[in-house]
Length: 183
Ligand code: IMP
Ligand code: MG
Image (cartoon, rainbow, N blue to C red):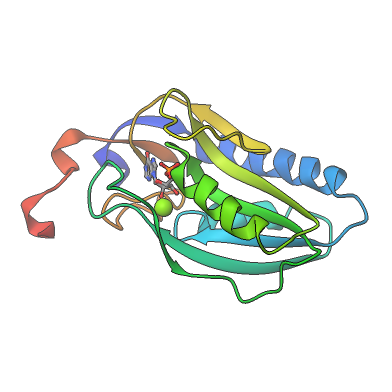
């Protein structure tokens, strides 16, 4: 699978190191508080699992699923919320975790929705941030890596649901985007 990448953008070692650093940062930031984490799956699954094991605080975990891609390398229209959280968010310190901040549409939509539930605080943590692609102004509170505007896969990020289980993050060779056998 790794041969299908033309470039590695973040290595497995860098991911391990940065999730430890971010875990420390989050632990210090919320010191003494309980945090309600909402992970946006499937993309944030691997990042959430590694990050939270480095957060030394009481944590409640829930997931939500949002879709804006339909087997394409570019977002199609507005994000669609496929299911919402079941944990109570009111008066809680809520931390949303996503894989990548790209156009900003997903996180601005979800933070707007969650804000209506009156959390005590609402913050966001993203593994990756692509600069220069924002369509909606949005700044994440915790960012793993800032990367160039290239479509990347691995460590939770997919192309047409493939490549999530790569242990690094990289750019897919063009010939592997839309192979006929995936139709
Ligand atoms: P936004 O709403 O445009 O900020 O996009 C966020 C979502 O788009 C992410 O949660 C990803 O699922 C998806 N996405 C954006 N860029 C990439 C990429 O380079 N590879 C894989 N998925 C991506
Ligand atoms: Mg996604």
